[in-house]
Length: 320
Image (cartoon, rainbow, N blue to C red):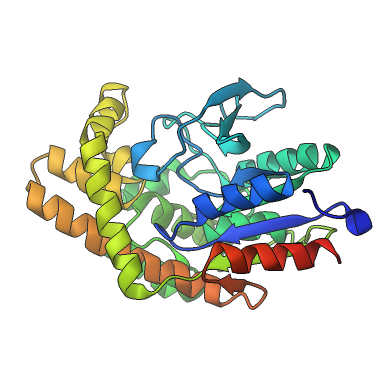
């Protein structure tokens, strides 16, 4: 069953916090409505970041045929019969920007629409979703290597305080313990002499249904803990070791997000195993709060508690 043809060009954006079960639900929707999934996860774009990003295990992996700019050769993953786009598109050695992501996501959406199927944008990186749906992207500002070198000497706390002072709005939404993002945000403000702007607002020219999965706080916290312990059993520590063996510095690994930073600290003997587990779980729970703060600002999002509610809204959307 596909979407009805009243308006064949439509997009579903399926979002929610970490460990909420959105990926599984998006796959069920894709199976029901003849869809394909575009990942909206700022870590799943990188090769080698698999366990700590909850990346799908592909049934098949076929190479695509469009340019990725600085990104590596792209692949389309197939999982449970559903093609997934924008996964493993970049080497962890390079910086991959939201501008690059938006281009790849729009290319994938166009290809899916040409097949008269429904693109489903799915993930928890709110800024990636906004960049695609609303056509918002941070302007390209050339790196200031001298400034970066100076900022790299500062602690994460100091970097956050600098950003908070010069751009309160960006400080509220940023991943505040990610030094790479903090430095980049500070760099943009200092180079442009303005708060980090949201420019080039070009919304998609067709209807978009934005669905968000709602989960009780207690259940979500349990899911976060359960998933992290599962990742450890699957080999998350070994995954970080492999990144290090591949020539990625601990500093860069730490910039890949909470789990990678905490495991990197453990491997450098800065914390013990118990501290690694407790810190990772606690910080992800705090990160989820920031995710929900971001999503709640968008009044277009229709929140659902289960698959049945999501399916009903998609059916209604298909008749528009």
